Amino acid sequence: MSVRSPEQDARFVEFIRLFNEGRFFEAHEVLESLWLDARPEHRDALQGLVQVAVALEHHRRGNPRGAKKVLLRASGRLAKLEEGVVLGFGNMDLVGLVFAAKAYLEGRKQAPPRITFPNP
Image (cartoon, rainbow, N blue to C red):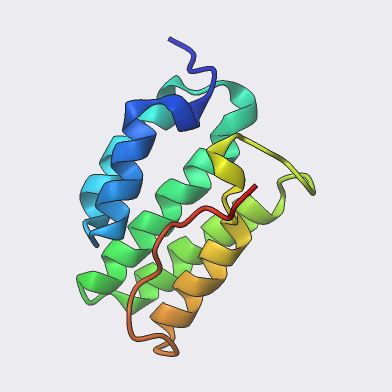
């Protein structure tokens, strides 16, 4: 099954809820299933989001090296998206999410990042 609009899929909404609760392992599992069903043009962004969640889970489990490595892959994957790529996702700031995650992993932020949507 190819998902037309990931942001309209219940799994995406569930991913955001779990991510914002700090349940990064569960969040990545939910989004991974959506990524596998997604159309090709959505896969890089979804996989990048999965990788951000995985990086934060590594950090939570005390594996800073693994966290940094996976976040670097997420950053590269999301950075290669075309300028202005819109996946729906409420105009989610994917790059900002990576920067916030990096700041958290480096100890410059006290709390893990949350996923929010800017007003259109």
